[in-house]
Amino acid sequence: MRITVLLLTVLIAVAFVGSAFAVPPGKTAEFAGGGNGKVVFDGKTHADKGLKCNDCHTKVFQMKKGVFKMTKEDHGTDKGCGTCHNGTKAFGQKDEASCKKCHKK
Image (cartoon, rainbow, N blue to C red; front, top):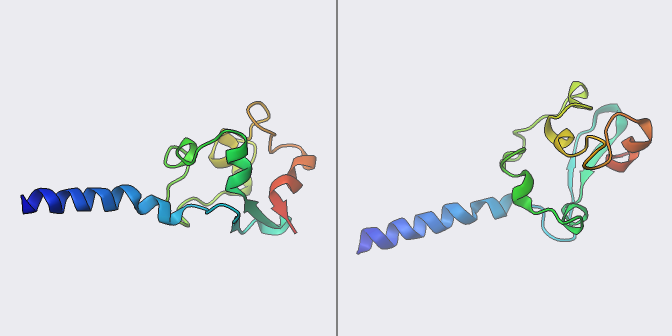
């Protein structure tokens, strides 16, 4: 019985550890954006479009901070943000007008 309770406790802890890394409501996550300014991710903006955290985590991005590093070469590809931001599903990354939607100086 003790082993069952212990295993259940560990399972619950592991299941909810990802929420500790999530962007809470009203907050943003910022990433270095090179010379174009930092990239500001707002989870609420994506949620308002009907997306859930699990749509990207862990399919596209790992939950651990700092694992994914997007490079200039990744822009306009199907890697990372380009999985959705391809100009079809969401605004693309190839045109200059879209830069300011993510990069903030």
